[in-house]
Amino acid sequence: MPHILIVEDEAAIADTLIYALQADGHTTEWMTLGGSAVERQREQPADLIILDIGLPDITGFETCRQLRRFTEVPVMFLTARNDEIDRVVGLEIGADDYVVKPFSPREVTARVRAILKRMAPRAEPAPAATTPAPLQLDTLRMLISYHGQPLTLTRHEFRLLQCLLEQPQRVFSREQLLDALGVSADAGYERTVDSHIKSLRAKLRQVSETGEAIQTHRGLGYSYNPEQA
Ligand code: CA
Image (cartoon, rainbow, N blue to C red):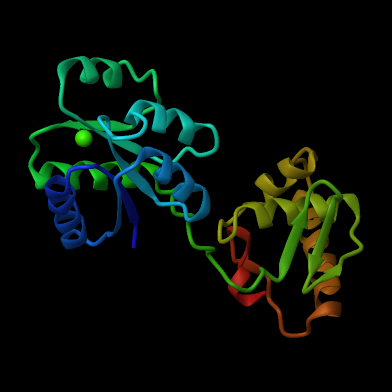
């Protein structure tokens, strides 16, 4: 639940804000002095600060300046006068937004929500699979591991398996696989690919008897199927 620190010396205004923000799912804390708010933020950081400009000790501007020395917490100003608005809009004090008094509680909660949304770290996409794929390709070290065991491959076997691994499920024709090897598709090329595949399968089988990582597609070519590896 986002925690909002309200810094406002007028109780009636603070009450309105507290009520509206709590109804909108936030927790709140209310302070009347700018100096106390700065100290509070050091000890127990809020997620957002609503800051009145006319405060009894230091101005909201000065409060914000002091906050900015150690935190990037979003600050939303409450302004009452036009000359204050000009300074806030000029953003010389690093405000994130402002509302002009008198304001509607709905306006404040909408702006608070928008600022918090803007600040929220982008959600990381969930990892696709929790278990690592049985075949792991390490292009930097030119190494392919199968169930954690590094395979001893010839250059052609490595290139061929790499080509299949990089696009799981894609069916590669023998010509395409030869291309990956940098071998021209002249007479007898089919047997060249087939013999590399045969030798690759033998090496994979030494690690896992049951795996069928490389699939044969009759008349078409070969593919890598991670599910059966
Ligand atoms: Ca005030």
